[in-house]
Length: 269
Image 1 (spheres, rainbow, N blue to C red):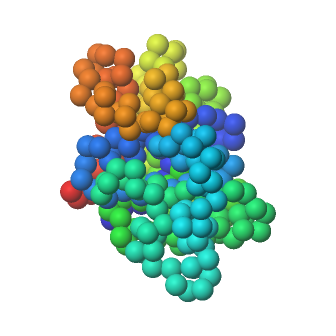
Image 2: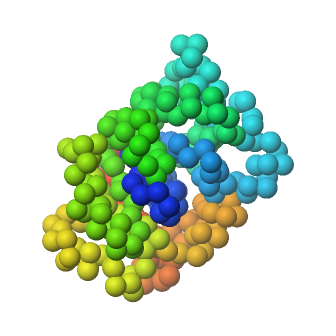
């Protein structure tokens, strides 16, 4: 059982959710482990709409469905009836037996606050029934539930952009924050452009990094697929593409992150 967290410590940065979707989906396709992808970004429906067209979610009122998502789990939790099996029942299968997603909810001040506070506990309970629980966190270190989720993670995937100031801030300051001390971390450059001056090789050289540095490349076809609710179709079409191919490069780089997570978290098939 493994708990994987995706976190960008800087507000305003992009690519963390797309990175979580790419890694979770490739893991679901290429490994037999049962995975749950959930999030704490309730102002965004990017995870939900990457697997089902957003217009369909709205037309079917799916996001307000009391039989799906995190809201009914919180109600069960408050009545001391939350079980690991209940989490499976309220999750949405997107790859049968491989990958479920846990829908968020429409924002409501009190319920949202209560839900966020309970995410760490829901994550722990989910870890009892899923081989891998993957959590896409908000871009902040200020909320207590974020700190608690990170504290309970087996692997923290730090998602950065090719922003020289933020990269510098991370390697000189953020990585030494108390919440990251003694944590197993993977640094991934999301929305990555290899031709940038701030590519993996130059970043590693500048900061004298001995540990590996990873990338999930920018890929407009993947982004379009997320916008159109068919990310899995895109991945299945391209999963065996040659690494030198545009889509093959995206998948091969993403797969490197997946394999590293599987290795360090000792995820068993």
